[in-house]
Length: 325
Image 1 (tube, rainbow, N blue to C red):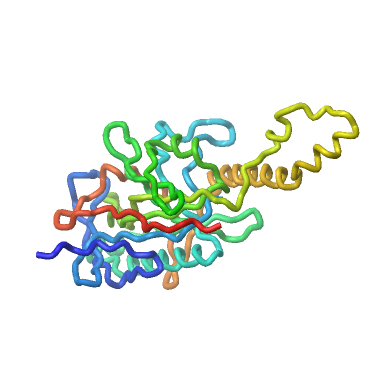
Image 2 (image 1 turned 180 degrees about the horizontal axis):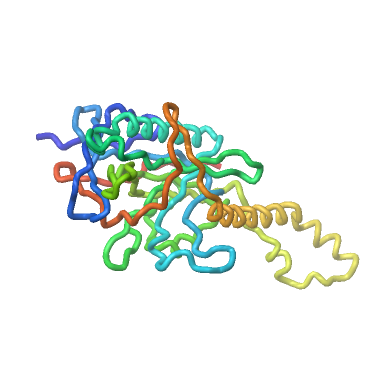
């Protein structure tokens, strides 16, 4: 018997019409949700877990939820609760592709609600939106989707694999916590793409309730951007600038003050955006077929995940590709 082709599909090439949904049923993993596992038909006819690859995305907005609010209050009891990623879908070509495919999947969930929740309970459930909506500072709509990192063991350490691409070679990087990531990478300095799996289809046991789907990040590939410079004003003032008048003009001519100021402003804008994200309330997102209510806070999912009995998920490394300038 040949080994199934567990293909990783670029998100824009995923055909959700080939995804088979089943009714969510009681299970040993969660006392709050019934769950099922959805498989997609591959080109060779086999049914496997859906793995898709996100577009290469600049890390300028989104990411982990902030640890504290503006007043400095802790928002999570444990850092492991922050092991989630908010992926923003802007007006770039890649952002539009992701948004279009998430709408396509959500429309399928709406159309096949009776399959997921059961015919007799169809009127008792509403979709928990896959897509959240907030606003930019200019008041324009900005959409996002939430992905969860894999965690394992009592420590709840991150189990998702991280790779950094250097000279066309993907080198594995040890990232076990949110702090590990944040200590090494800042907004504006990297690009990333992810391999994501469709983790589960669920419905809440409490009625009336919500039903929906959740995702796990299997791998993240990081490319350090070579089109930005991490020089800051701190470098300029590392040594005394109190010099004789005739040397001041020469010293200042050696420093691109405009560039330094712009980079500091960009960093501050990114931090402000992070704070604003926490305070904003997601608005309802409409699908192409019917209105969808705003997403509610997600429950802890790691221990709830169903592992398919017939299909063994296999993580495939992201393709090697040299970073462009």
